[in-house]
Amino acid sequence: MLPPVDRTTEWFVPRFGPRRFRVFVGLLFLPYTGMVLAYTVIGAMLAPHIYWDRVAAMLLIYFLALGIGAHAFDALGSRSVKPWGNVFSVRQLWLLGGVSSAVAYAIGAYYMIFFVPLLWPIAIAEGFFLLAYNLEWFDGSFHTDGYFALSWGALPVLGGYVMQTNALSVSAVILSGAAALFSLVEIRASRPYKALKRSRDAAAGPGLEPLESILKCISGGVLLLGVALAIVRWNG
Image 1: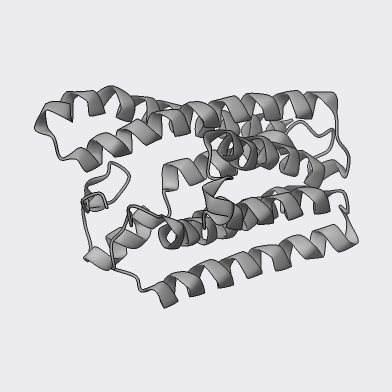
Image 2: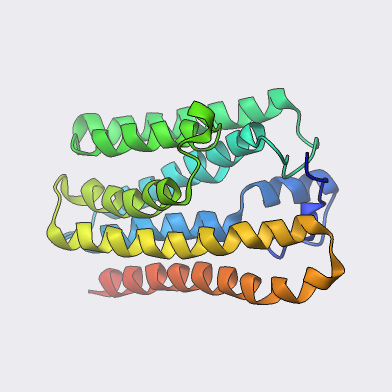
């Protein structure tokens, strides 16, 4: 068992407020959740016509399912390190993950039943990874960088596009590949970053800075790209 770490010192955790609030914000991993939300927007912006209510729906769906649900399950499923300690009980984490995921899928089901049936395969795949990746099912076989890039990079782009068009296109598939590569950069930098943070080794300190810079730049860059494309289409 690796030593516990106070992750409230992470760069994306607020320095103000009670500990429970700070841990909850940290649990959301907002910069990385923001990347995934931006992917849904980027995929949607490829569509010939934009339904903005569907853009908003996808943002809400992924915030609930990933930002809250997946990260609550991840806090439950981590085998060696509990990233946020015992601030939230097992029961509370199950409740957070279960309720937020159920609400997300209820919203998605409305659109899939009435407007975009092609979204079902993506929703089913994302639901599988939501549980298998974060709860480390099948001995952690799906808790890998490749599946991370697929589930939280490629599929959100495709989901955003399909939500608008109920169709696939070559450009959307290519863009989903680009998103997968961006997510791969993020997770490949995140793993050694977390290992260094856990080491409590003062000599390892300087090694954190370039990794943290990569994480800040990749998340910030994807967010800005999503916002810029949305502004272009909104004004177009």
